[in-house]
Length: 96
Image (cartoon, rainbow, N blue to C red; front, side):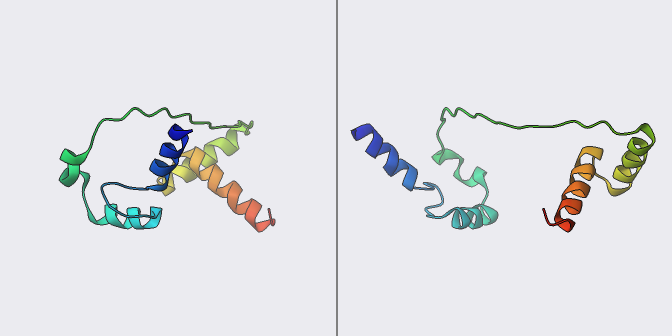
């Protein structure tokens, strides 16, 4: 029981270096400061990260794929990014 309340207290304190209480305030702080100025105040921690990502692949006709690759290169983005942006735009236009 005590462990849980200790964990809640730690969780409610957002930042020890910036002394800010909200994520927006922490972001503002780090926009104006460099971690190297605070390096001596840091400590090593162990963090377990579980990233869950999902990608779906769809068949695209070869000529269309070549056109997408050229368009992406012209825009300086990957074909993957361009297709996702275009699909998001179309779905938004369709009200989804």
